[in-house]
Length: 95
Image (cartoon, rainbow, N blue to C red; front, side):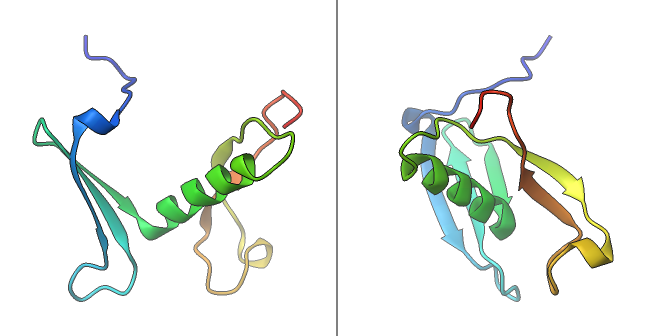
């Protein structure tokens, strides 16, 4: 059975490319592994990861963050935002 969990270390990564593909306006991050596999993260995914990372690293007490995918109704989301969002959720540790 194949593991459902994988930890990527810097030594697993051959290259990371960040930019907007030709004909697109939003960035994508392509993580190329030494195994030949590629992980492609859309701009919103990278933005959420960075937002959570900075929130933890710059907060005097916060030790973690949990983002959960949720579909928002038209009235619940900001204008021009996608309905599907990764939103911070209480993780039970007081963070």
